[in-house]
Image 1 (cartoon, rainbow, N blue to C red):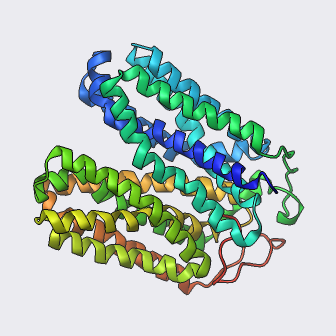
Image 2 (image 1 turned 120 degrees about the vertical axis):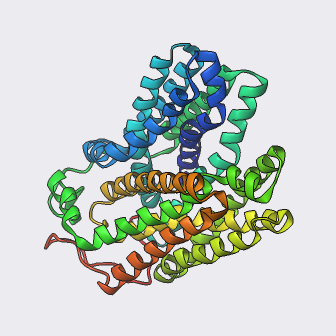
Amino acid sequence: MGKTGPAVLTLSLGVFGIITTEMGVVGVLPRISEDLGVTPSAAGWLVGVFALVVAATGPFGTLLASGLRRKAVLAGALAVFALSNAVYALTDDFAVMFAFRILPALFHPVFFAVALTTAANLVPAHRATRAATTVFAGVTLGFAFGVPLTSYLAEHAGLAAAFWFGAGVNLLACLGVLLLLPSTPAAPATPSPSGGRPSYRGQLAILRRGRLWLSILAVVCVFAAMFSVYGYFAEYLERVTGLSASLVGAALMAFGIVMVLGNLLFGRLLERDLLRTVTAFPALYVLLYALLYAIGPWPAPMLAGVLLWGAVHSGGLVVSQSWLARDAQDAPEFGNSLFISFSNLGITAGSAVGGLVVSTAGARHLPWAGAGFALAALVAVLLRRRLGPGAPAAPTAPAPQAQDAPPATV
């Protein structure tokens, strides 16, 4: 028990390293384009291919890994991320770098899915949501510090230094997993959730549930609502609010720091009342975007609005994951992989629609794109609630969790 806290924090560090690897490249694309002699559009595919691979392979990779020891899966994934960063630092061949963006993307959803389930199993059931919140804190810390630090190192110490930083973080998390996580054998496959891990067929069976697909639709719409506007954060603040590039950078840093605090707040709210928190989240986003539209042209109010925006934005991760987990309690790792894949699909859809709005109607109208997706998410949540708590498809599945209780499989 004494190692439970450090073990969960190690998983959070691993998430930080993975997010820094995934998103840190965004801030150094111009340097990659220059140093490796490729066009900016070609360099941009280093971001796009990662998200596409995650969305396409997540559930299947997690399904295949479900029969392996969790400790080995987590350590192996982090080792791949450390190796990939080392390759980025050493290579001057764009094709090699591109290949080593695909490789870690295959392990990204596997790590997240297994880490969330492992964190929940390391703590008492009533603290499962808090453990997931701690793991998700690695995401917010990655956005707040990992991505800006990667950009800073590339600018002041060279591109290789930025990637060696990513390699070091992932290697440190890998060592932490090996030292701090308990080593438990993989449970034998069984069609009964009470007798070990579910079989491959049992895990795939959750895809036949209409309730699950409504939850998935809500996840897609929530992430589309988040990233249809956040993806053009700098565009909005520069063109609509009129901030300088330096102020936009400071606002982005403040946004990420507030996300850390907001993530903890939403974790507590979910522990108290999951249904009300999940239902209120998209409604809150609609109100937030209406506010951002109203104050957009005014620098002082908008800078204050950025702090509120960051606090609300942070809740999307843990709120969406907790909601989908209710309908995948008998296949938690597979359910978490569905969350990772479909949240990435939401990011892709939101970014595409946001880009369309910017190119046609202008950045000023971005908040309404986000509000539209948030309203769609609210409708999906309400429809899912009308169906009741639901029950797993298999007749041997455990009784469903009470509606007002935190999800045991987060």
